[in-house]
Image (cartoon, rainbow, N blue to C red; front, side):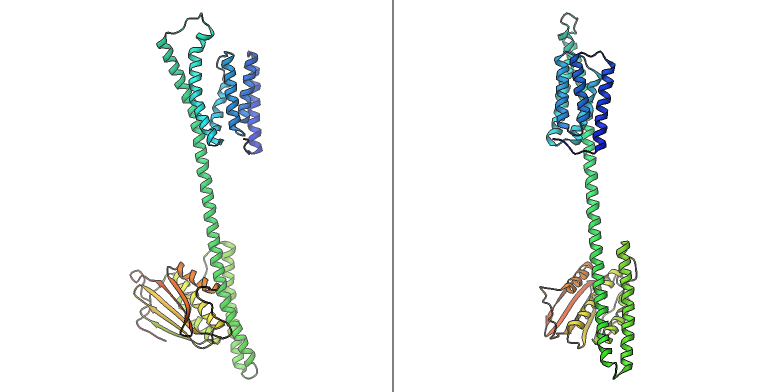
Length: 394
């Protein structure tokens, strides 16, 4: 029955109630019943926000006492206006509609009391005729009903605005949390791709350098150079990702399709020969699609390096009329089983998410003793300029 309000709100309402009671009592001239009514109306002001239902009941008791004691209207009766506002602003469904009903019934009762009360209280006094009395009753009732209904309506509007504001805040919070989660997922995916690729190349080169250290110092030195350059590139990309994580900023250099030859060369140097076949006239893809294609190719080839048989991996790139189709195939290694399509690892899941965000599709699985990753992203040749020539293979 009691609402939870801020301490300052409760203190403010209590202070207003006490101040109004003292003012009304200082004005003086009130009979005992009037003093009790003033005290009740002061309680209405003090309780209107913490308990609109209780304030409404007390207000009816105060006005009933006034009418029973045949007291004339008093300025203290204005306390019912903020009370009706509170029933609509802070009350529940029942209290809200009880406040509206009280405004209607209260207007009728007050109109009748003001119109017919003087004649009842003073039987010998001259009274207006029946028609005039009816007009007076209607005027009083309409005026009081308009005033009471206005207070209740203002409270309802205030509640509607507050509800809409809270809804917007919740929506903004949900959108912000969604953006943060998407940002974290994207950074985690990029971090996985960068670190997995770089560490796979570093490990492969380190193993090669260890075995070739004595027999072929030149090969060992070349492997160390590759390790150094790969580690520096990885460190640079990780710094970009960490900056994005700190600043919630997606800006920063990202790999493009023009860097695919470097990627293929790194994998070849790491011990996985890459045979590339490219067909059709290429076009300049948007940066988001270029990043998706690059990262998926990177992840697929790193998986081939880590889990495959270290034989040549095949990459086929087909520039079609409406989409770019890419396939990566590699032999199956005996040491590390390839995950089944229905139970993909984190790498397969990340690749699929990237392609889907680029508007494409991805499948993966065993085909004729090899593991094949196929994906496609849409292209729009009408808007994208042609980048390379026709029918090329390497």
